[in-house]
Length: 210
Image 1 (tube, rainbow, N blue to C red):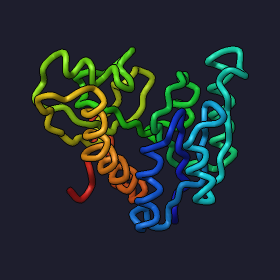
Image 2: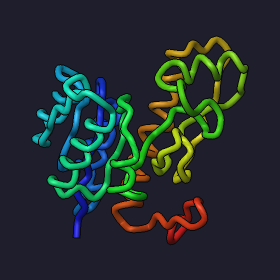
Image 3: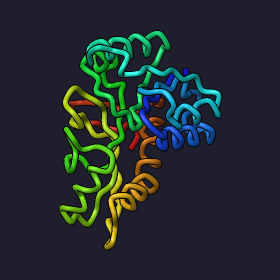
Image 4: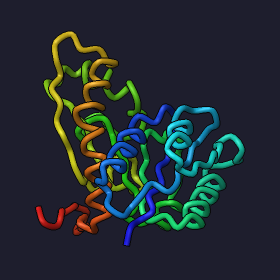
């Protein structure tokens, strides 16, 4: 039986676009993106959802007085929509343990670096790539991991390395990592989840059949 996938977004939704493309190619089998949740109105990710006949809901952070209130509303919405898998795709709003506890080991996040490098509090968007270039690393990449209460610290599902080139700017490195890593491993991780092939033991992920 197919799973319902909810994708949480805060911006343009490039990773959402990669997931929609994968769905069109049949990568997820009977599973489907059944809901897109945006943390603010007017973002392009909502247009992507509309253009592909995917239900979307704006759950605006500014309309809630606290992280706890917002997290409860989000978890309630996801449960109401019978969500099996939650994917954070550029979702920049802080949520608390209410969401993790109600969807244990069912939330995936993509991070634009090779965890444990350049991750944790404050590392998001271009800041990740700025830090990598400041350090002079020769490779960077992307990581898909299970989300836990500790920022960027959950079990790693997939990683893909990307070359850092002389003359790279944060913007060019960001683009290359999206194209060569994020847009490849995020759909693959979602497929593995939908096929029940992600096994977690002792805070480590084992992929059944690989």
